[in-house]
Image (cartoon, rainbow, N blue to C red):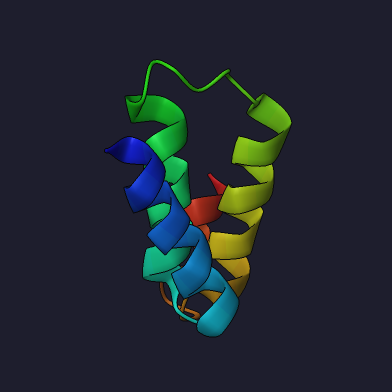
Length: 64
């Protein structure tokens, strides 16, 4: 089940690169799906992506 959901997260990110919900989706999977190997570097890259996509008022939320 999680593989299909992760596929849709990736599809959404590819089709709508400026929508941060799809980045959050991928980040959620890294922490919530035990079968996925931890990838700290990728997690931080996703957080950096969120900071870039965030509104100016929300940027600091993702950079702390």
